[in-house]
Image 1: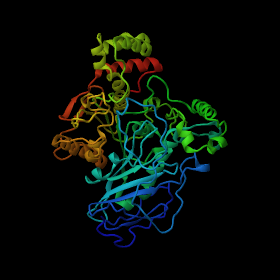
Image 2: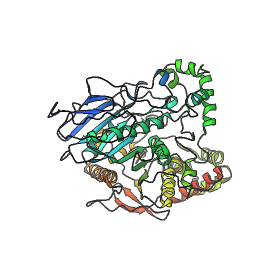
Image 3: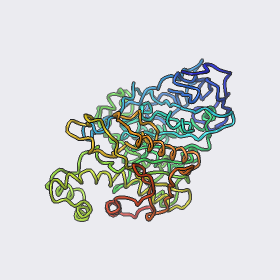
Image 4: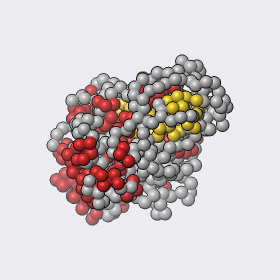
Length: 538
């Protein structure tokens, strides 16, 4: 419960637009009422003398009706005091193709609606009104089809307890977040699609305008992200629209570099958007807007960032090659067993041979040299490695090399290896032993975010797990504070300066180590370079 309900007068008198700049205002560590863009908010009933919590703050107008498929608009003003006790609606989830049944258990995000552009703030108590603390804004994962800031594993209290002001925000998903269409482009002045990215930009703009009221330093904003969220964040690393809105970036397990094929252009996305509309009986923009959100999101739609010439001016690798990225410190990496939640490459020798030849063609022999298998048992032992290496490892590995080659702000690479314990009867599915999953895709989050007790599924964590979480989250907050994860008595994390550098292993062992899986990563360098027809961006 709060210890000082309605204590004192309003802490600040901001009157900034929802998406305007600023960052002014005065923070009172004893205030429960704060003025933000749109009106007054009251700290939620989860607040304490140590951490104040504000949930369900709108950062843009509801993107409904005529605002569906438009850039976020300013928040309409409200009267009175908005009680920030509960998360706002999650954005409507899309129709995501399943991985292995039950392999990743997405937590219940609560009610879903198109009216979903809300954010949440956890802020630690300050020693005085002049103290400003680093700010961290999360972009969650979920394949651009699932996920919400209301999932308990994203709770900001764990990082706030270490001194950061934490912001989690929703962004639009599926076709509601990514649809491009010729009529939308005409309506939007030559741009459509990428609405999820525009939502992220609006969240960052809200921080610049309002975060000082929460004790945050608007000049030290870290954009941290995982999986699909990291794909979006990597675009903002190169987006001129994002320049100055954040000052460090964390990418966990993904990015949006072209991997064997260019990211779709606006023209290509418009064609796909028109075909999508026709497929659901909505051949015009008016017909699309007449459809319910449930009807739109129930249909299959391939979500992807768009090279729209605006938010993303060009292919991401070309922007890196031209050094046209935002110059900020970068921390990124991947997990030891990223591929285990997803369908296996093959389960038999015959399937392995067929899949290798179909996917890698003239380079199938090189692939099989990297992943040798001559028995069904050997195929099953390697079955989840190609997914890990080709996507979840190759993206951060290549972005790290490209970022380091620019030789400006520092780069820090990690490799997460902890394999947690499970209850004896705890399986992801009835057939799979928990030990099979290892350090799987998304596992690192509850360690880095200091949220072990809010993971899905719950686990019997040990003192080893809690020690790893303490170290990992300390690295993250140090990075948000200074742009360098090191500090105090933490094991030294070396900067990454190129392919010969070490990475930082975080697991049962915490220390610098050689970058793993190099033969596989080298193979995918060669395969993607050949398929794309141009060199890597460094």
